Amino acid sequence: MSTIELNGATHPLASGSTLAGLVAEVTGRELLPSGKPADGGRLGVAVARNSGIVPRSLWSATALEVNDDIEIVTAVQGG
Image (cartoon, rainbow, N blue to C red; front, side, top):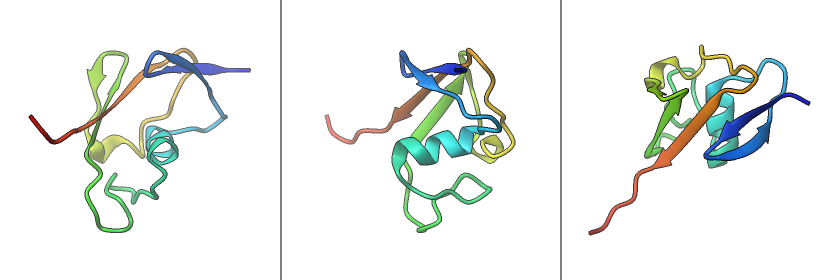
């Protein structure tokens, strides 16, 4: 089975997976091709692939590859 690292843990990698699909899976929200939530709300996450930030507009076009190291960070309000 092919895998990636997701937030420090091994995660299965399905053939044809994209960064947008992974973010949708993790957040439980459908995303538009632009990376924005289909429900019109705010998503509040940032994504890094192999230590480089990936702009939201590129999530749908970014194919995941075996052994990618993905970090999905959720913004938290407070102080």
